[in-house]
Image (cartoon, rainbow, N blue to C red; front, side, top):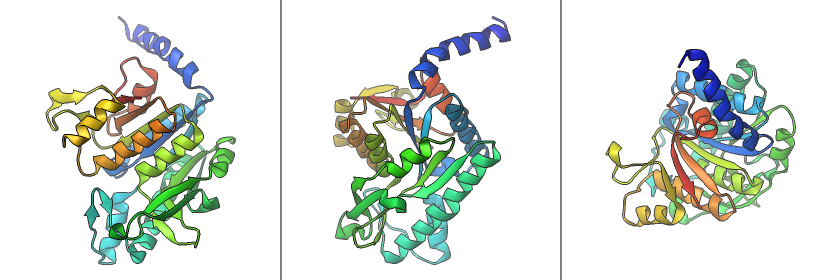
Length: 283
């Protein structure tokens, strides 16, 4: 098969998926060390712009753990994790907001614009998009989401811009809360009734026996996923991702994907090819 025939085959295969996702909402959670490699980040953002160009309503929700850690180190604030979530006192909450809604968010917006797209950077605080309350005294100012107000997101999506959302929340009393980005993305996906929810990170997906590559899971039902958690096969930072996906499923989403953002064109391969790329989780 010639190169031209290969390209034609790929385009033909992708047509079904292009039609499926056109005018549909895809929520992408972007985080992990996949954000710190400039080449990887450029590849992901180019994929996102292509999705927007072909008529997909893209909503980008981001974390920024490395940026938060760097700022906390600068201010000599020690990081402590409990069940995969960062303990957050009031100072940490404000520093996390500075890192996420400031440096990380605006850099992503700048990068998208430099690549020829359009984007609007916001945080969960804007328009009370993410309302929250304290999750537990043990975690400090880590927020439990009580409500998503998607009007601002929908307004941006209706334009030619991509909403880029930093995962922070606000309480009724105006208190700022640190919100896990996976959780925020899942709740936003559920609120928007997204066609697809994709969690981008720096791991390939799920394994029945990590790190054995032979045990990589291409597809799994939500019921089987719960068994992996209870059997201790999923631990630490992966647990919030799984809980986030579980919630999105319970909100009516039929499927979600754990995807390695380090793979070139991972989003395109996942959405527009028969095989996909990451771990597909079905209801």
